[in-house]
Amino acid sequence: MKLLFHLGRYSRLLAKVFAKPEKKRIYFRQFLIELDRLGLDSVGIVFIISIFMGAVITIQTGLNLENPFIPLYLIGYGTRDSMILEFSSTIVSLILAGKVGSNIASEIGTMRVTEQIDALEIMGVNSASYLILPKILAAVFINPFLVILSIFIGIWGGWLGGCVLTDVLTTDAYIVGLRYAFVPFYITYSLFKTVVFAFIITSVSAYMGYFTEGGALEVGRSSTKAVVYSSVLILMFNLILTQLLLA
Image (cartoon, rainbow, N blue to C red; front, top):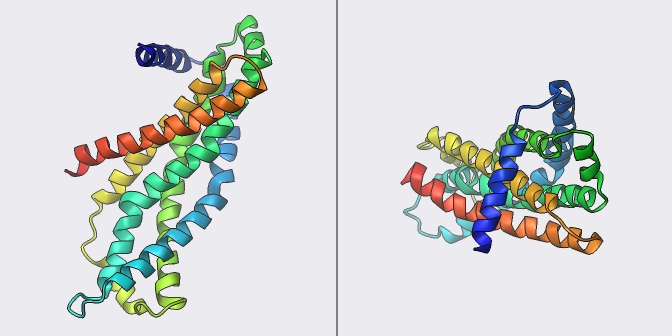
């Protein structure tokens, strides 16, 4: 029953969020602000995570391919597909769930417990749409660019870790592997997952913050729940989307 209660309240909140905006100019300005806060501020962490993921994938794959009959260019092939299919979309989204999701939940939760949301409602403003819609649109728009950036950085990190810092394989073999049996649909699949994950992160985190009750302690709990629930849903939808799109 508690699950059905939250699903119903979540659906009602989304109905308010996607109601027609009163002043589109104000919403567009908020959208640009959220692009900077949710997207551009995350470039650094995406860069760091991706370069190390690419390097580790390449080195570990190379160390486990000891069979002389297996060509070394398959290391680059494995790094490329690992970054595209799973690491850049799913792992980066999980990291963003912790960074962005907790920020959204704590921001909106603080506004709720300090009665700022009530003040917006008294002024006749659709608080759900004004506070949440720009965040959802900004994340859905910018996160695919972060994933594309992650893919390129991860592949570069794989070259750096496997060809420069170690002697796992040569640069020529790595490039051959990157070009071997490339499937363009994998990019579409990765970006589609990213859009779904971005919606989950922002909407679930905003839901947890919007219905916070109590004080500062409850804001912290809402922030924690937002990260946990978003991460679980990302993993669940990752399985569902993989089955639907790749099986």
